[in-house]
Image (cartoon, rainbow over all chains, first blue to last red; front, side, top):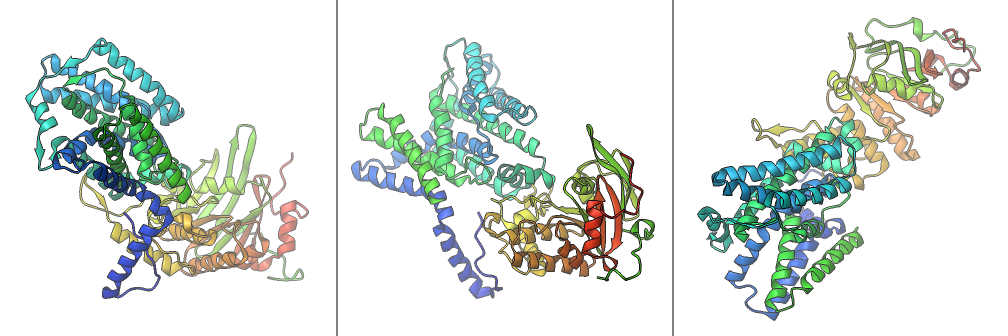
Length: 334
Length: 271
């Protein structure tokens, strides 16, 4: 993350540190950057409120189950972030996860090993992502329409392959993936965390990441300086597809079955987490930390409401309200 | 600037120096039915500001797009730095040392000044696929580039969105000047700027020239052309109808050449 340089004078060594600290405070309080912190503020508020209402909210056990529950959404939100950073959107991300899960189940049930099944799931995600990306960047068709079509096509394909029936997956390693933990951190959350860290490095410390942000910020300017914007646009959909493939493995491990279910909540929540995280839907401005916190917030919201005994029916409603509030806050602060 | 009684101006077209940084001979290009360039010839000397003037639609932008690799001319020859060149892409022209400051500036507003300066020229360290950006090196290099060139120094860590028009122009020009470029093409660099900012950008152009950069300047502002340039080419209807040393011409003559009230140096093509 960048800190703005606050002075033009060249600071000497001891004052440099103070100037940097001052710059950091100013950077945090800057309205344009404050919007980036909306998710964190929201998360803290939620945690305080839920803890006050139910003291078991912050128990080690509940934190652990929340983090595990958040893992899939974190992975999807990271993928969605790359797409949104280029001013695109991937509406198919959850159905690609469903399709990859069904492929995983089918390959696994056919007697192939776990690794082969996992690779098949990743390859499925990558291929669908590549198809999305090529149609959008080379075919010049609006991302919204293309991924809406893929949403339907991928869930349909999943139904066809699975013949509409869930397939139970019994596998020791998958069970360990779902239940194993280091301290309060479940394996699946740790995987999501590693993915988020790698994504952060890719977005902010590689040429590719800079090109992603440049393509989203001003595609015309980016191509004028020689950035291959069409390839970048294709690549982000491949990334989203591969991450949907990884999410599908986490999903199968968690559910214990490969289901051709719709998973629409995951789609809405992945976009919601990105918006909560302060990522601009117009592209060019993105963080990984923001959407990850956004995903944690959404998970904490659902978990807290469940702990308080609020009917399940209220959960989508509350998620919707929070997301619109966050979007409003972002807009208001800019 | 000379008065009208001075010696008759020498048409530049017959005076191509042997070491010109750039010569264009008979460049022609058509877009469908529209013949945007009909055999334009011009040249630019090393270490000079060469201006191109002309009315809207005269072919100025098309000519510089041919030079900067955006378009490939249908016929004609372009020689740059002693070699005949045929740029397929802007990237190729950039690699050869031709930098363009685009009219729309080609800056990404949500990236910082240093990210824009190094866009597609990032400094990386490491090997193979594990190459990471050397952000520190780029920031400090950017700091040097900006503070050595611009008067109105923007902080290199600030996003371009926060900069004024003049500062953006300065960033754009710094980017063009910063990478060992041999020729910098500027398309209307002060068109969108106020009086003070225009003065600063002109100062920057003079400075680049004094550092030995050759500059190709497109401008609608005759006073600016007379102030900054060493040579002027006048374009009309897809051709360079006249070229003058700036010291041997004046605003009236240039206006006359642009409108066609004065005959150029080359025979007018029969319509």
